[in-house]
Image 1: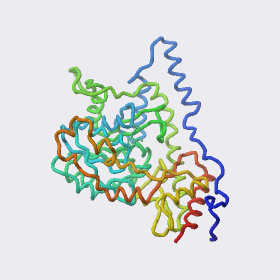
Image 2: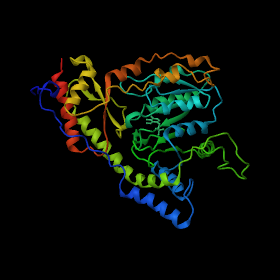
Image 3: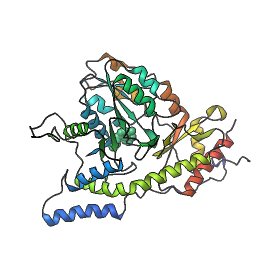
Image 4: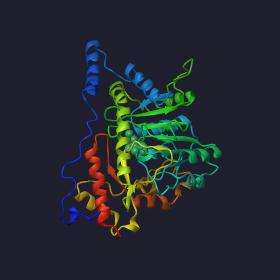
Length: 409
Ligand SMILES: Cc1ncc(COP(=O)(O)O)c(C=O)c1O
């Protein structure tokens, strides 16, 4: 195929129009909110939390997961916090965390006076590798928080095997992986307990912010609920008063009412993201130098964004130059998903002088994460959502192919 002149060098851009917006919320969400206000005005009673809508949302969320227990909370970060809170870890316990993830998937460990210990990434993905998990386990390790990034599942067979061997509890961070499957099973059903984010940038939303703690284990569910609402004696009879120290992490009925509408839309959102991402993957087959990143065998991906891998030795330019050329073709990207939390000042500098920084030498773990660095050096992200249709997918494939051909070594 002939090499076309790149837009960055004065050629015609592949795409001249902005990408479509998501339109995540429609009239149904608005009506759900209006219904709650109407009821409140009519009855004279303000809506609150833990009422009919929140209870229904939790039941419906659990049903989507194939059964189990769901607790609505007010964020993805607080969902991770409550999931870990349910495990009742002793202060100073080590918790292995993912190398490349949102701070909300790591900071809750420190907030519980436990020690976050970073595993390294499989450089072909953004995920924790099972081998690296095994290498950082010590006699003090009690749990692992594994993030499924970009709507792609981590190596759960490997991670669960290491966890089993060392008796570790497994928290799945599914903030980016609603509807994602690993060997046929939904992410969030593979470990002991899972945390979802439902803020408005995620696959589905409970209005602006929110999250869900999901588990198939009833006892963990009640512990998580207690922790997420100031130790109220949920699940206990007779109620003996507040049974543990916790914060108020509750969701609320207004957010849950919106979330119930969103849950109905979720299957279609998941399907369209999956189909769109797969179409990009197929479209790039045979193009040298660029592809969607390697995925675990048995992955059903729901593409929170597109993770693009460059074969840099086959290209004449750096990743930054490649992305600049792509932008000129009308395809914006995030050049570096450098969410390596071990590099962040809050972890490196440990200025907040509370436990666990005070009593564990292990927190001096130096960032030496060649896998995570290679993963973020060789890959970049293209924003993506369910409203990208055949034209957007064609443009993404065409622009990636055009730039890769122009810069082929
Ligand atoms: C992997 C991961 N974990 C946790 C969070 C935190 O979720 P929230 O922003 O709802 O607190 C995010 C947010 O994007 C995330 O991507």
